[in-house]
Image (cartoon, rainbow, N blue to C red):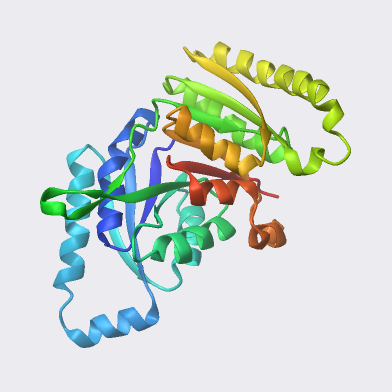
Length: 291
């Protein structure tokens, strides 16, 4: 389902951690990837003036070799321009089915991809984006080493509010199951802020209705061949409950819909899906609605 995908890299240690974890995408049919480095015009000029491009080309070759060693056909490319625009443009023009970006956790000093590129790509893209969180883990002699979580096919958590946006994302969950996802947790969160003042007395009614909706989705996935499906209806702040469930259920991949570029105001305010992508311990696949 993700035969061709793009990896946005800045050649940082965190990006190496992301590259090393992507062999798990082969379970979903991934075969060919574009390892894409985007330089700003200032970076490109600085590199040209230094007359020494070996450090950059050398690291790009190392990442390419890591991906080739797990069986991908890899093209490595460096382009000049805004990463958030170039990645989105190339994904559409060259028909890639997925964009992979690293999101460095708060424990890392430099948050370039998290703060600058990853969410710029989310705002501009018409393709699903897989945001892979990277954390610093203690290594040898107390040194810290960036590590990314792998195993995307082990346990998928799908969070839905039953909107068109979520329905669109659910089609990807169906495809993940058809391609071998081993376990799925279906989640709906009753929004405490929306219900607290006037509708809390109807919470049991809403829970019954929404659990029925989740059971309908469960039946669809059972027919696709999923061996294990759990249903969860929670009450609280949606992004907090979703990230909590990721931790307690040990989910390996979160799938959610996101409101593409036609919803710029919602993007800047911060939607639930973007909050989850910033906070989740597991990789988050955000699927845009294209209008």
